[in-house]
Structures are given as structure tokens and as C-alpha cells.
Image 1 (cartoon, rainbow, N blue to C red):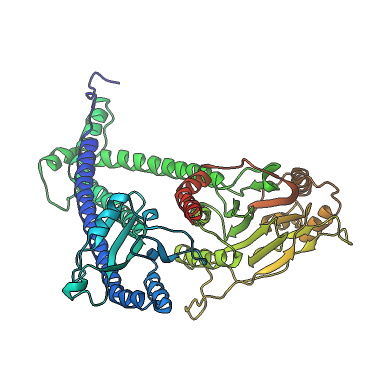
Image 2: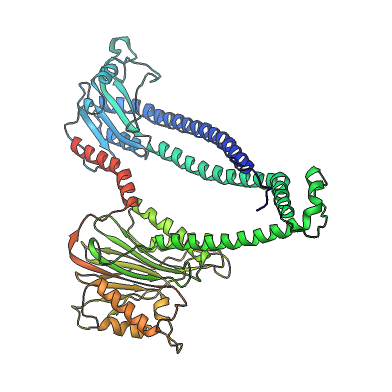
Length: 563
């Protein structure tokens, strides 16, 4: 290196510009999102209050007459009418002493007994309610807001139907109390926050990239080019230069650059090629790491009543095969195996979208494997377009009922290994459907339901799933491993240990292919129904949804105790 050297740049201009743009965008979009979400929440709360206030006040005169006439049919009908609002938690009618006459609670068929008004409101609120005097507009309601539990309580006394006469003024015959939930408002606000976050993130990225590219093109790039050119000249590496007119015309930087343009262009091209190669290498390596993170590692893995072992080998840096299992409620387990057409980065990205959807199943009470395939069909079609489709086998195993429900979207038929059956050969789980993401020739894409099959699944039964990469693996003579060889090998296995089964198939596959590289991804999974349950399996996603659903479970338990 010559004596001519560049000064060390501690804070590059690129970083300063990018930081300033990001800060401005975050402040503007964050303020806007906060304002919009606050306004939206206030509007929803106002609407909910008006709606419930209207239905509550409308019920008051009806209940006053019904209570005075001891018409329980009208009382129950009116309270049931209030409960038709899905957000109403309870509607109750109390006597003038505060004892329950009729008490309806959402989610319970039987009416709770021995309920008093203090079970719903505090003593202080009860005293306020008992002091309310007759108002012909019913405008002075007792309104209690419980933000911690996200609910709202409306209460009002019922007066003698002829209480307009001064003689019977403020003669109370009972009290009406209605509780409604505001959780849906919080959920709507959270959904709006997520939408705004995604929208503003995309908008911010676009603005930052666009602004950075413009600044980089007009200022930063020419300066860097001049710096590199001056160093080249200082080291006596001279090149013939040529002048290239710029779109915005000549300026001071262009006048300095003109004598070095050709040399700089060569250097830029070299750096550009090297960066592109490095970017592609980094992208493939990153995708490979991400792809492997999608596939669970299972070697005699115990999950509740099940033992799982699996083998996965990608044909390239990233593949299209994917499998996973998901513990469900009531000791059940969902197990899935799919294959995206082709392999490489696009297939891995589609696999990422599918896994993202499947991870959401922890928060849902899923009962039908066909529902999963129908929703995945829409996701794959919207992301993969006409270039990518996916096969998928989905099964839900219920150890308590000893049943296996499955649906198939053009995936290889799995095998059921039952050593207690009359035949030693594995049975095939037949059932087929269209590929996920299939676009019909008429472009209508009408939903075609996937058929659900139900079979018995007893203790020590094993289901063996595999992708076509296993049966289509070729040896040096271009012969395929074949489904027949696989079934024969499974038939000859005496062990019920899933890891031994997987290792046996793996060694037989390696022996057959003679070490040749696989042309397609190879995946196979063995899942056994065990006689005993093993608890303790969890992961971060399961913990998150369990903790999020705990408040609801606690609330249901509290209601049971109260009733």
C-alpha cells in the first residue's frame, strides 16, 4: 500500500442517512398508528356501550310488568333476548332484597342457585344501586367498568309499573343486572396493531431502501468511486478512461470522475460480481439453516402417549420436504408430512409459510385433519402461484378413543404396522385428494373438501409416513428403491422401537443407493402408540399459547366455583 491512504470513517454517511430515515419513519408511523388505534378503540367502546345500553333499557319496562305480574315466562324470554348478544356474559334479575329470581350465564345450561346481587357487584356499588330513584328516561344507570377482567356491568332497579303516581314513587320490585365482555375490543385493537405494524414495516422498508438508493446513486457511490480510483492511480495501475453522460447531467463530482470512469467501472463490476456471488452463497446457507430449523429432531422422542423417530435428508442446500407433529388437547397429537414440488430456496420459503400456519394450531382446538388441508390449500395457492404446489398427509391420533383420523392431499400412502393383526404385512392407509395449491383449468378454484378417514389405532400400533424421495431413490443402475422394497423391509422388522425402525430403513436405503447423492429430498417418520403416558414435552410455542389461554381457563374455573 502506498503512502496515500484513506482516513478511518467512524460513522459512515450511509449509516447516518439510514438511521435518520428509520427514526423519522418510526416516529411518524408510530404516532399515526397510536392515534388510529386509540380512535378505533374509543369508537368500538362507544358503539358497544350504546348498543348494550339500548337493549338493557328496552328490557326494563318489560321486566317491570312481568315481575309485577309474576310472569316468569316473559322474564326468561326477555333475559334470553339479552343473552342473544354474543358479548353478554350474564343477565340476571334480583328481588328487591337482592336475591336471585332468574340468573342466566353464558356457557352454562343450568341456572346457578343461591346467587345474590353481591356476587356480581361490591357492597358500595350495591348501596348506590339501591339509592337510585325512579327516572322515566332510565338514564341514571349504574355502570361499572372492570378493565382488568375486560367486562362492563349495567344495573338498574325495577319500579312498580304505576310508579308515576306520587303515592307509589320509588317503589322497587327488583333489580336488573347485565354483564358484557369487552375482550373482543381488545382483540380487535391487537389485530389492528398487527396490521399496522406489518403495513408500516413494509412501507418503512420501501421508503428507506428507495431513499437510500437515490442518495447512494447521487452522492455516496460517486464519492466512493473517486476514492477507489485515486488509490488505483497512486499504485500506478492506470486504465484508459471514457466519459459517460449521467442522467441528471454533469456536476462537480462528474467532472472529477470523467478521467477515471473506465477504471472505476471495471472495479465496480468486479465488486458487484463478488457481492452477488457472496449474497447468493449467504442466501443459500441461511435458507439451509432455516430449513433445518423447520424439521424437528426425533429419536425415540416421547410426546404424551407417543414415541416418534424420523429421518430427513435434503437433496440440495434447502429442500421441499417437511414434517412436524403438534400436541393437541385431550392427549391427541397431529402429525403431518408434505412435499413441495421441486427443491431449493423457493420450495423452502413455501415450506416456511406452511410451518407458520401450522404453528398457529397450538391456539386452536382442531378436530378434523381435512380442515387443516383445506386451509393450507388456500395458503399454498396464494403463495406458490402456478409454479409451486404441495402434497400433504395429515393425521390426528386420539389415544383415549384409540382412533386415527387422516386426510391425504396426493401424498404417498402411509403404512400401518400392527404386529397383533392376522397378517404380518403393513396395511396401507388409502385415501387421496388433490394437491395443495392446485389451480383448476377454469381458474375457479372451488373448494373441494378432503375426505376424512377413520381407523382403529391400538397400543403398539405404528404409523410410518414417507415422501416420494424414499421410494424413488436410485442406485447406480438407475433402479428405484420402490414401495415394494419398503413394504418388504417393514414386514421383516420385528422391533417396535421407532428409532430402530428408522435406522433399519436408513441403512437399507444407503446400501441400495451405494452412497449416491439423492436426487430428491428423503423423509420418513415412525410414530408408535405407547401404553403409558410421558409428560414434560414442551417448547417455546406451546408455552406461549398455554400461558395465553390460562386466563380464560381460570375464568371458567372461577365461574364454576361461583355457580
